[in-house]
Amino acid sequence: MSTAAPLRRRPVQQRSAQRVERMLDACAELIDELGHDGVTTTLIAERAGVAVGSLYQFFPDKRAVVQALTLRNLDRFLAAVVEKFEAGGFEHWWDAVDAVIDTYITMHREVPGFGRLHFGDVVDPRLLDERKDNNAVIAERIGGLLTEHFGLPPRALELPLAVAVEAADAVLNLAFRRDPRGAPEIVAEAKALVRDYLSTRIGEPGGTPNGQSHRGEELPED
Image (cartoon, one colour):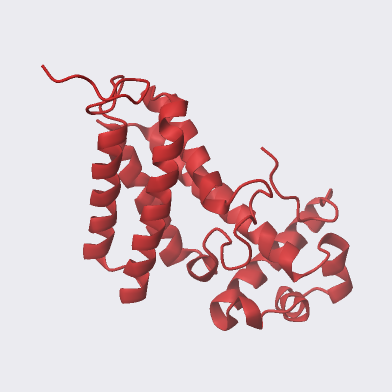
């Protein structure tokens, strides 16, 4: 996958890496306070306690800083999801899907800047990967985990997961518009929507989708 590379150069020394992390933390805090449009490279540098010239050593512009922040959020999201998958205890793939939604809700509530930035759509629908939109990247990563842990066929997952991620994204946005912490009744509806839709497309682990063959054709009735 061709993911975006926002850094002019990667920090080699630990001190430089820590400086870059401070810049990203500062950017996240400022996005929470001012929104994306209100943030400038000068403000990021001031909040991070570095010279503007130091910021430009690593980032060509504000967009690149925001891009790096979004990629860091994606890494943290996926790491948290993988941790839940590897902890086990899921009786069915939809328990894992619920855990993915719970991870998103937690990040929205607790990670600075995430509630306004999400996975970058406010900046660019292809911020994570120049060849596909941001939600497609998320769906692809989740699909890989479902395949690995539940043996679900990747090709059968591709389109349903793309649709499910788009639907969940829209409904969860509604949940946070209604309540800054995410209206619980709407979060529950998002989970039910995704579960019901994917159940008709994926079916039981190791089986075929309900009413369909592996090729997507409807099975004849008895």
